[in-house]
Image (tube, rainbow, N blue to C red; front, side):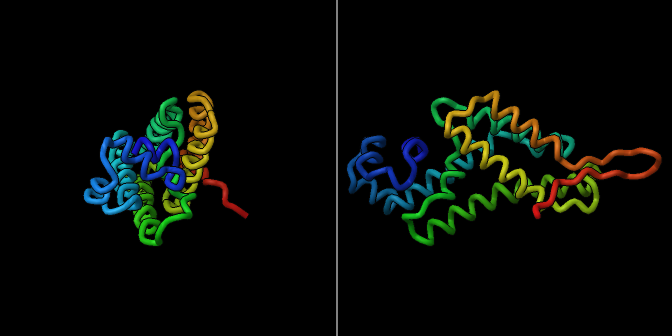
Length: 191
């Protein structure tokens, strides 16, 4: 995982992988089959250890959950040892099979679905305005996280990523009460 994260899928050679694991090529093939399967195992491990470390869905509101997740990711993405996000890097992989592309898309969908479920719960519980498009909101925050990951890969500081996260949280739909009417602040729609 460390080698793939640092160098990317295409730039990582079999020699890089066997050296990092202290094994020879036949052992790598026996254990994983090929580089693609090893990369998929690394991506699964990444998703389970990096995203799962933040129990954002335990927050009392969907907005608080989004804030906790964005703050967590800002800190994680700015890590000097591993800037950026391995899962965002998978979006740019071209030299691989359709099977790997589909498997990686499935992993990204699991992350997306988990956040969407928290937004939908917020709608049901009334802390997110009824009528909010949970899918569009989820996609918006996915784009924010992808942008933050690319910024981190380019050297953005934790402070800069935290500022981006805080700004993005400002557009989270809010239910406000005033004069008996429900006012809703919505995510801006693309033209």
